[in-house]
Amino acid sequence: MSRKKAVVSLGHSALGYTTEAQRDAVMITAKALADLVEEDYQLTITHSNGPQVSMIHKAMTELRRIYIDYTPAPMCVCSAMSQGYVGYDIQNALRSELLSRGISKTVSTILTQVTVDPYDDAFYEPDKVIGRYMSREDAETEIKKGNYVKEYPEKGFRRVIAAPRPIDIVEIEAIRTLAQADQIVIACGGGGIPVIEQQHVLKGASAVIEKDAIASKLAAELSCEELIILTDVDYVYKDFGARSQEPLPAMTVAQARELAAQGQFEAGTMLPKIDAAIHFLEKRRDGKVLITSMSKIKDAIKGRTGTVITA
Image (tube, rainbow, N blue to C red; front, side, top):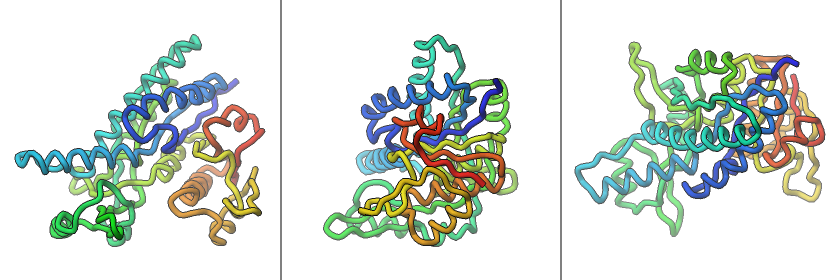
C-alpha cells in the first residue's frame, strides 16, 4: 500500500496555552499523530503559536522594562523562539509515542522562514492582537515607534500586527528532502517566521502569518494528497451555535465559497480553514481536505465523522 502524504495543521487546543499545559497537551496530540502514522500516513506537521508567541513577546517586553540594557525582541525573533520550543515538545512527545508502538522514525523540527510582500494590504490594516494590556503611556510609546495598538475599555491597550499572505517557504527544499526520506517533519510553525527579501537578504517582518494559510501552501508545495486541519469541533457546521446548527460531512469548493459568502464561517476561527481548503484544492484538484477534532481523527480518516472538502 502506498503511503498517503498529508500536512497536518494543529490548532491551539493541540498545544495548550502555557508551557506546562503544552507539555501535557502534546502527549495527547502525539497519540493522534501516531494513529495517522499507523494508518500509513507520511506526515508533515505545522501548528499554531498564538498564545506562545504572545507570551514570549510579553516576557521580552517586560524584561526590557526591568533591565534597561536589554532590547525588546522583534516579532520575527519571538516567532523563531516559539517555533523552537513548540517543535521541541511535539517532536519529543511524538518520537516517544511512536517508539512505544514499536515504530522507529525520525521526527525533526525545521526553523522555517516565509517571505511576505511588504506592500500587502495587511500591513496597512493590521488586526492580529498580541501581547499584554498596556497603559496609555506605553501605548503612545508603541505608536511613536510606528506600531499599531487597539484600545480595550477599562482594560487598556494591546498591540496589533499585520497578517499578510505567505509568498514563498524559504526552507521548502530541506522540508521536501526530509519528507521524501520518509521522515516526519515539523515546519512552518505559527505560520513561519515572516521575512521580507531585499536584494537576497532576508529581513524579519513585524507580522504573523495564518497557520492554516501556510498549511495549505505547504501541502501544495509537497504535492500532498491530503490537508488535515485539526480543530475544536468534529465537523464544519452550518448555522454554528444556533438551534438550526447542522454538520456538513462533505462540501465542494463551490459550496464552501457559497457558504462563506453567506457569512456562515466566523472570521478568525473557521473562515481561515475554509480559505486554506479552497487554496489547496485550487492547486491540487485531486486532493482532499479533512477538518475535524483531534479526538475524532481515527474515525474521521475512515469516513465516520469530520468534514471532507473536495474540488
